[in-house]
Length: 181
Image 1 (cartoon, rainbow, N blue to C red):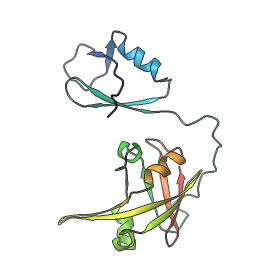
Image 2 (cartoon, rainbow, N blue to C red; image 1 turned 120 degrees about the vertical axis):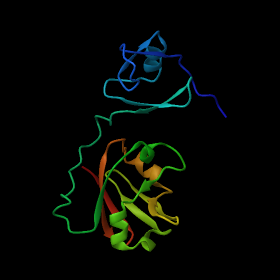
Image 3 (cartoon, rainbow, N blue to C red; image 1 turned 90 degrees about the horizontal axis):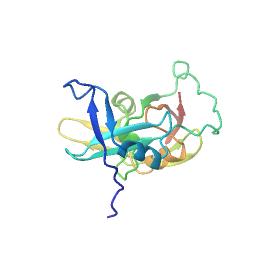
Image 4 (tube, rainbow, N blue to C red; image 1 turned 180 degrees about the vertical axis):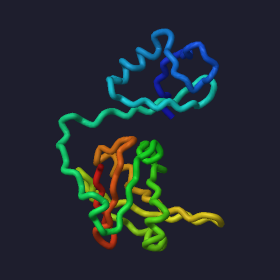
């Protein structure tokens, strides 16, 4: 396993005891991290505490300014086809084999959960179309439906980011049109 680069960083809070308040860095570790990773204004950094000595940083960059501007999709209020809206969280966009998107309960219940138990769906995104496998997880208390294999590819190929809101419109038996709003 390759070792990840490290930058020694120390943070101080603004003289308060509540750790949720803003803090500032001391020393040259954080500025060096920012320079080495080309962190610009508008870049989102998510710091996750690993233990008392380490933070894991996930970097989300602004979309490419030269990317084509896409026409917004029809309003979900005027589109009568089955659809759902999802705002992407960190667990939806991280690069990992286990990355998946949970399908809202009200949506899959309206169509029957069996419809999501294993088939592949075509997701037609703003930039690319990708085949994505669906899966169902059932426990004694709950049932969940997910888009699994291929989802992380769909996110990357369509340049989706943390915080993007997507509308999934069912346009065929196994096909969704996915648009950003």
